[in-house]
Every structure is written in structure tokens, then in C-alpha cells.
Image (cartoon, rainbow, N blue to C red):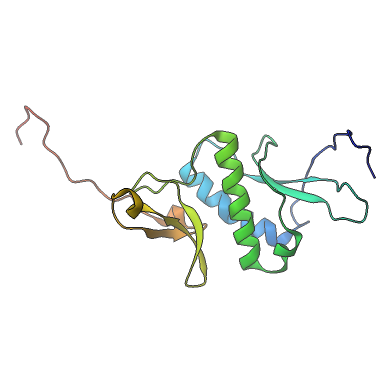
Length: 163
């Protein structure tokens, strides 16, 4: 057991230590790459437990090691669906709080989206209807934001131009 005020040293989790969380994080990193291309991939970071008989605490962190929020629930590693849901929540919490911006944004409404189950698939959901900017909708499956094509805007004539 550590002393009350000892600050534990976080360690970078190696690929393969938590394979179910690794696969979930890979999907989130696809979405991060397409929506925030200037950001390096998210990673798993671990802190030792306060009590020796407890599991270590694993977090989703930015590439620089900063994280925000609760550790990943060890029970979520039991299956891919629960792992993806918990890692998506943790990734969104870390990106939003450490970068001070909503993530990911719906390209159609400019609103932050949230992970939600849609017919058995975790997807990014936009609450567009709440602001009267169009109906709420599922934007894409988590990990599939790179498959979307941005809607084309109609050509608008600029004042003073003829065509």
C-alpha cells in the first residue's frame, strides 16, 4: 500500500496488455484522426492501484499523457461491445476536457455527438433537433467517421457576381 500523499507514476500500457481495449481504442483513434487530424492518437495509460489486491487503473489519455475522468471499468474488458462503450466515453471525456472542445462534432449541425447504441452497434448520435437545426440522428458507427463524405453545399451566387 502506498503512503497517502505519494503520487503514483503513470505508465504507458503496451499494445497487447488489454487487447479488447486496444481494439476499441483503435476505432476511436480512426475517428480522432479524421475529426482532429492535428492530434496524435489516444493511448492507454495505467496507474498502480491504491491497494495491492486491486487491479491497476487504466485511463484513455492524450498522446502527451494527459487524461481526464474515471478509469476504465475492468469488467468492460469482458466483451467488445462493453469495451467499445466504456473506451468511447473515456476518450470523449479526455478529449473534451483536456482540449476544451466538444468532440466529435456533427458535420451537419456543428454539435458535439455522443456514443449511443443503435440497433446493436455503438454509433455517434447528434441531438440536432433540440436546437431546431434538423432532426436528431445517428451520424456514423463509432470508428467509421472516416467513411462519411461531407455533404456538398449548393453554389451560392455572391453579390455583384454574374454567372
